[in-house]
Length: 388
Image (cartoon, rainbow, N blue to C red; front, side, top):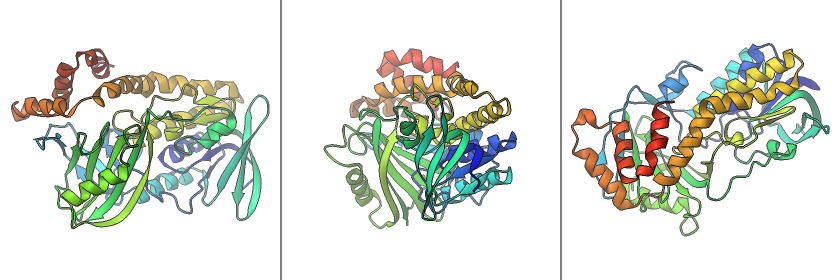
């Protein structure tokens, strides 16, 4: 490592690697610091993405695509199944390989990538963030930069150190648990979603196939509901009922910030991307693609600011995010607050109405329509989603 870089990225996940990649492409000197010993490990994600979101960043490849998804199955609390038609195709990734490839691409563009580098602070003047302090090989180093990009996950410490409140309210933090399991006999081209108080109150449970009879099986529970029963308990009960013969290969638990984007995601010398900026889709909890989109925006804006020696221009990143996915996530958040209040009887009724339709009319759009009929207050926000 040198003592000084144009841009230091803290975190080597999809958002951080993408920011580093695009900043390096624009000619900036870039350093990525990842605290874990290996990029992509451990995996804290359901690993599902859609083709349209992924393709602009990287060509889907069998080495990191574990399963190609063509169908959804939505399971109501009473067990009724709806299989809506979906346009296009999706993928369940192998994040260990996928994240590694994104970091390699950033390195190919000229970024330096360092693992087992534990960032423990930022340096700053009264006006701006000026770099980071990092524990590396038993030494504490001070590294200078013109811009720091925080891609360090939920409740970003980088953001907090710089003075940005990155905490997530209990109401918006979902308690999540997931296993990767073998001996799972499900359709390998189908993602399954279970809804209802039994499975995941205030959230949903997923089964995402990964080929060779393996799958990611997890759930997210509204945090205020998890006080009575932990997400892991819900998951253990589901596994015992549906997949008693499964072999558990990995198990993890943590928080997912299903909130609106932070009010502030940049300041002089600092930008936040991905989970650190609360750029997760508030309804689905998915953050891979949105993090990469934000990473690209931040990387380009940061590199141009360096090139023009104008650190005051970082606010452009906030505007670009808000004009694209930010405003959309705001509407998703409003929809989430209503959908997560649906009772089991509402969900069963929606499934019953969908099942009566001809197969070619059983679409995600029609699913939204049925939800709107249950709660007419959703109609304006749903319309905005489809026409923005």
